[in-house]
Length: 139
Image 1 (cartoon, rainbow, N blue to C red):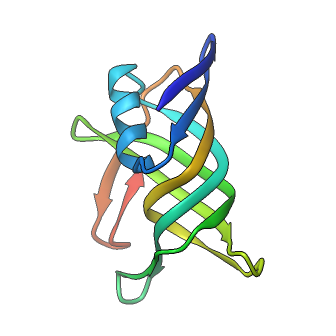
Image 2: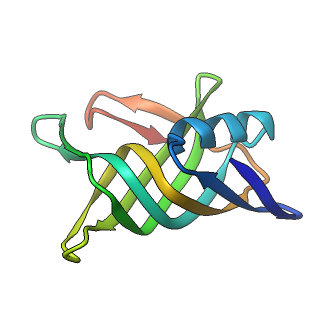
């Protein structure tokens, strides 16, 4: 991971081959003391775990993909929960046949590069667990 550019509260960050994006981004936010942010990204991945949340069952179903795919779009938020940094990430991906998959991203290993534009927010964004929904919701 490399910080390419910083202007005030905006960052351009490059993630490199074989890095696990969520873990590295979480560490970056902790080091920079970022408590709230919004980010987007693009690039390529070689391993991916996508999830779909069934609201009625309050349960995720996972799809593990071990193939090189384009990252067409990543959209996410950074928040805190009980002093821990949480990354909430969704994405759209395409394979070499240009077939598209998307969903909640649980894990993403970079293939060539992944470029993230992150905007730090000045306030703290917090989450708490909702029994009714079964998710960590913003409060």
